[in-house]
Length: 90
Picture 1: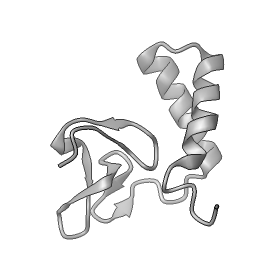
Picture 2: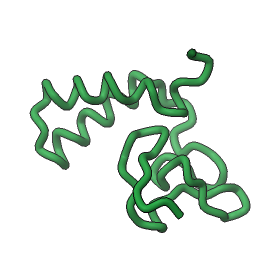
Picture 3: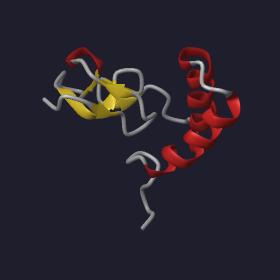
């Protein structure tokens, strides 16, 4: 499917077919990564947008080596616009 997609829950780039989430019927879900969406449901259904921002910030610091100040800024600007979190907004 798409060459490079961003997970609409956490913003992680999805570059390989096995990184896509799965629907309840086992088909690929092209909106979300496998870490966020599996078997037709979110893996962390009760996580809030604020908690996702904190989680993504921590991952950017630890995995990408992005300075904390910048990682937090990126997550705060980006996460709210993703499909999972922008519902009900104009």
